[in-house]
Image (cartoon, rainbow, N blue to C red; front, side, top):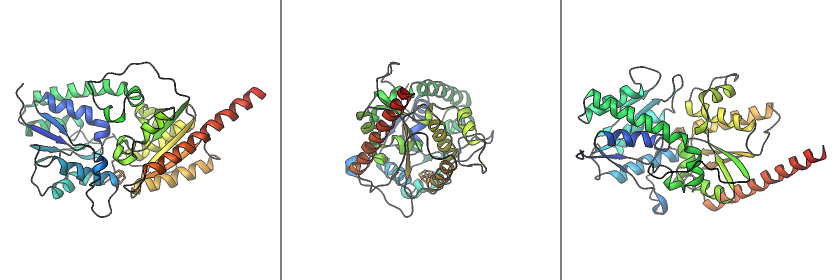
Length: 332
Ligand code: SF4
């Protein structure tokens, strides 16, 4: 198929969950997808007041694509759940990028709000395809194709993050085997997908965790039913879908099956600040966590060394607990 042009996708925010779906959709319509590079060692982050690091990274990545693409894809993500909403900053994301790029690049900013039929994922993507010159059947077909490939991609997620270097986990053409590599510690890493998988945010902490012999488990593999089971008895409902997923998955993992849990939070994220308080209170009521639990707060000033030291100390705590549990059960 003849290439129709270039769509730029900033490597930020929900890129870290939906990139495979977005890429296949645009490619099926005949567009080339260009992803911004990581900020990496250049470290030239674009600052604007009172923002969390993930939002600064969105703007920085969008600016890297300026002049290289025909459109930027920055959807207005209002809700990615049938009942719960995204952090309000996601609604404004396309406007922030438009302002930062001085309106020089057309932005594909279709609203996605899964609480309403009008803005369902399929409808929103079909609408967007018509902006790119496709008719309704072409748009629908491209979306269905992308959705199918995305579902298959998700099935191999845990193996991908444990077998591949972090900078390759979204390369769909790299296969992974179903064989589980032996690791002596199983550790749940919880947080917004961009905190977990953006190496500019977390200083490639997951690669370091793997080098320490940890097998990484993330919320991606959990079903809505498993999340609901952990949050349905809360005295106050959590309305943010990501917050609800974080709390639900954390308590799911704390109830067994892992040797420890790490919560990666963003400094200047109001939602994470509230969640931390909420989690601490809930743990207090329950008499503490059943496995070691660590909270790491990330911002642009976080040093890799400091994070690594804390993770190494956490590994010692998990190993000691494992030894104690083993001794106890052999004495019984
Ligand atoms: S949830 Fe927090 S980290 Fe994510 S965009 Fe909103 S404020 Fe930023």
